[in-house]
Length: 181
Image (tube, rainbow, N blue to C red; front, top):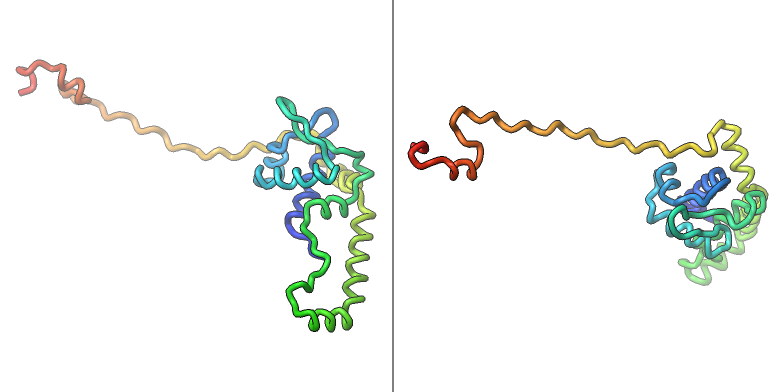
C-alpha cells in the first residue's frame, strides 16, 4: 500500500473541514488558503470525496462543503481509499513468472503488512484527528492567515517641468509658434 501526498492532503483537508463546518458550509478557497494547497487540486480531491459519499456540496453564495456523515463515522482509511488510485497488484509491471516467484517468497509478508496498515487506518476516525487538533489549541473558526502582499515600490514622481518648458507633446502643440523659438 502506498499513501501518497494526495491521500495525506485529503486527510488534512477533511480534518480542516470537520473543524470548521459547525455553522455553515466551508468554501474550498478558505481550506486552500489555510493548507497552502492549490484550489484546483482541492477541487479534484473533493470531487472524489463527494463521489465516495464522504462530503456534500452546497452551491451558490455561502456555499461550500460539509461532511456527509458525522466525523466519528468517517475513518482515515475511507478518505484515503476515496482519493488514492490504489492498485490491487503492485507487481503488475513484472513478468508473470517473476511476479509469482516474488509472491511466493514474500507475498504473505506484504499482505499482512497491508492488512495491518488498513486496520490501523480504519481504527482512526476523523473525530480523533479533530480532537488532536483541538488539544493543540487550534481555534475552530480561525480566519485564514492573510496572504503576504508584496510591497510595491513607490510610484516615481513626474519630473518637475522647468519654467516655460512644456511637459507633454500636447502642451507643446498648444504653445504659440513665436514662443517655441
